[in-house]
Length: 195
Image (cartoon, rainbow, N blue to C red; front, side, top):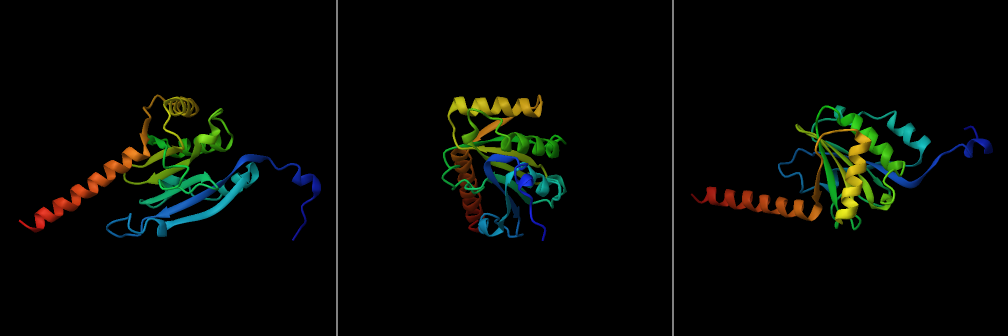
């Protein structure tokens, strides 16, 4: 194994934060939330521009993933789940598929790791690409404060250079909708079985 010369170490471009790439794959069960964390895998971490490109030049673009899989990139100390303390009081900016999601994925990744959301870089948690029939990207932030949300949203729209509408959704509101949907489905099935 070759040693790294002292001069080469000085050429590494460190990022302000360390980031982790996650992969989630639908297990095929009827209710994917039952074992959601069992299907979530932390793949690798990076803290420099060079490590970022050594990873992202060698993985599939998100649109090439099997339907039902996700990529996520979050700061290393944050898990890509609502329950994580950094996420639970925040929300996410949603971007629906318009045929440009792979490009948006890279543009957002570069803006996140490059610290382009000043003065709210600390509020950026990560990004999720959900590969589904109707795929989407979501940028997760730690706050639902209107000023922070709007500033990050306008910068995001600017970086993407898009006229498409972006939607912000608080995690707490989405979770309530999801719980109500599960209750509705559960009680609907109960009613059907008793008819």
